[in-house]
Structure formats: structure tokens, C-alpha cells
Length: 180
Image 1 (cartoon, rainbow, N blue to C red):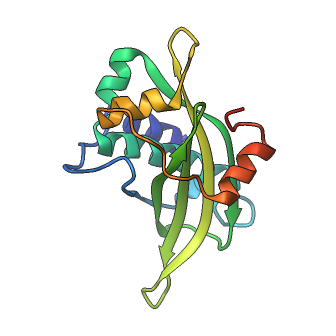
Image 2: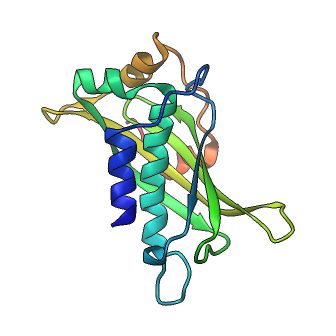
């Protein structure tokens, strides 16, 4: 429930835009593991990672100052597909960060990478997990909004996508979210 409330806050009362933040810049969201995030093995449940990713994506849009224009058009983000690879566990009260960045887009979806990290006991950053998300935007009337139109709205002009990394492009084809 805590993560749902965080998502509601991040979406309906977004944090302030970051001056100079660009579409391809990294957005960082800092969090801490709560008792309600834990599974029976006392580490953060795999489903909670996905909820945290939702919050971080809302923060990414907030950092760009995109919510106002998206709301004016009645456009909202949904996840078309996602995958995540876990490397280390997160445990109770641990602080962690999610770095969210756009990798590229095609006619249908925007591809994002969301990387979880924490500090080791020695203070060095440790990679925890990496998620890849294919996100799409819908209109309130149920229409699909082409990804280039969303990017143009956020950037202020139509721009070309950087090349989507080969592993992400292969995944997108395998799960059938890539533009046909």
C-alpha cells in the first residue's frame, strides 16, 4: 500500500521539474525498503521492485516538467512490457536509488532502463537490479498515442531516436512490443 500511495503522490502531486533536464538525461529516485516491502525471506519482494519502478517513471516525467502538457492532452503512460534481472537483494531499511533513462523509441513505444543500486558497507555503489520497460501512452478515449508524438511534446519538436541497444531491440521483438 505504501508504494501505491507513493505512486499517487508522484503522479498527482509531482516533484518540481529539474531545470535543464533533457529527455535522455538520467532521473534519480531515492527510496528505502519498508517492512511492507519484504517477503517471507526478509528481502524486498520482486513485485515491489516493479512498483518502485512505477514511482521512478513518474518522477522521471516530473523532472522533465511533462505532466502539465500530458494532462492537457489527456495522455497517460502505461507499461506494454517489462523485464527485470536481479543481482543482489535489498533488505529492511536499506536505502537504494533507481536511475531511470530513456534508451530510445519506435513508432509504438518508448524504451527505458531502470537500474537499482545501493551503497555497500564500505560505501561503494553496488548494482542491485536492471529493469527494461517498453512504455506506451494512451489517450483518455483509449487511443494509442504514437511514441514520437509524446517525445515531440516533451522535447518541443520532432527528434530522431538514438539507436535502441541490440539486447533491448531483440527483447522487444521477442515479446512483440516493437513497431512492426
